[in-house]
Amino acid sequence: MSDFTEIWVYLSSSPLLHLTLTLIAYQIGDWAYKRSGGLAVLNPVLLAVAMLVAVLLITDTDYGTFFEGAKFVHFLLGPATVALAIPLYNQLEQVKRSLPALLSSLALGSATGALSAIGIAWALGAGPTVVASIAPKSVTVAIAMGVSAEIGGLPSLTAMLVLLTGITGAMFGPALLHLLCVRDSRAKGLALGAASHGIGTARAVQIDETAGAFSGIAMGLNGLLTAAMLPLIWRWLF
Image (tube, rainbow, N blue to C red):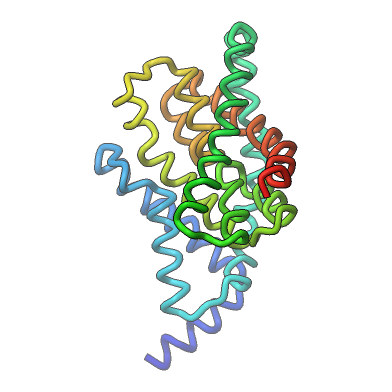
């Protein structure tokens, strides 16, 4: 056991270890998801997060040390987001034709996402700091953390809630939309992007290119609307 501990201490000093662990964890999650036939509870991101958390706890590794390696994957979030422009370009004519419905749906969806989170948290007895942390849960992490800090929330708590929101939306969103008889790929994409940001958009891309394009638009515009409007709504409410 002492030999294993010494080996781990040596390896943990290399950023490549945690990068490798991240990639392996996701590959295992993706394999399990595909083997199950796309079972929602076996979402690859959820499984990868659970495995990595378990490893960090068992090895008593702090998040800062882990992120030294994982930051290489984090860097790729930028190029991956930019790459969403490809399906958007391919679906540009559909986007133009749907623009009035798209913008009105996003405005309502953005307001509903924030106000419902505030209302439910407040009704359950959460304090102002927790409520402020929950409010921007449906937008991508970078925007959500900035908005949370501006209205008095805890950015670290917001980051966790954003991740949970994205995973939950990706897991259960498509099934819920099917249950509600939503068949249009544009509507599916808008719903997933507005409610579950990047992780939901990744799930929408798996549905088809149209859903992926509209989800990418929803994710971007919802982030913009939330950053602009939520601080104003917060001051008006509180």
